[in-house]
Length: 349
Image 1 (cartoon, one colour):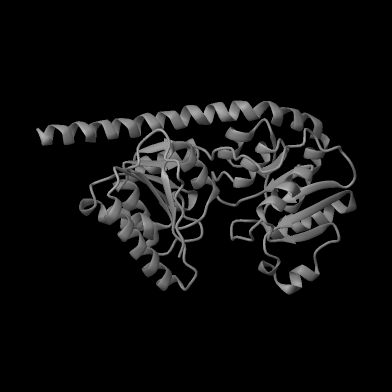
Image 2 (cartoon, one colour):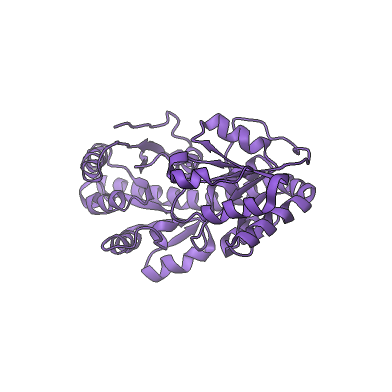
């Protein structure tokens, strides 16, 4: 089990705590900007033992620190449930819950009692962060209070290339983990249709595909295997475009933010949230059929220079909008702390 807490707590106070059971870039970026002391708790083992170990570590951490404000990532619904149930005994902290799509619109984990627990924790949280406005109605219908905050644009460890010279083959990086919401088979068939004028580099562990599937990949598709951080960014920088699809409705994929950070054109799923945020810098596949995916890749190639220019223009606009949305949440957190300070001062008198 490991825990990481940044030394710099930022502009707020040391009584702002963040807990996550996953090492997720979005959580790290948000906590870094706000100055939340982030504890990433991890344990490699079976599900039941993992829940016991991480649950015990979380209870101990909250009992010791008794924060004013707790930021947590959900899923894990187990982490969120523990945080809500423990609040009366650990200082009655405020809860900011960063709800990823799976917590709001379950896709992979729909079995009882997971959706019930998600609804319970969203209602109990003081604020639930969602990545896009399309999810606000779901939070409010559950009885929660929503705040929209997309992913913070990351800072790549490599310098962005102003523009990768257009050449044959047109190089597409496919951001993949082989999760249930990724149309991998359709992407592969689209690549087969497009032929040798296009090449596809697909990230993620190769063995997530069966041996038969790997043997039948077309010549213009290669699996990169799991890439170290620097190698991942280098591949994106050196590709002409980034492709990242999801079957989840209104899901903003991490690859899109990463591509924007490197000023790379992107090919995304045609869901309202993605269109609203990345319309100027992306091409959207009309569906996840091989034909529509191939058409989107061709469109990206034909508009390549235009998309490179608009990606460069959009970077500062995106960063400015994100700061405005984050500042609104920062002001709310400060108001909570002022209220608690006033209450403690009055009680001391």
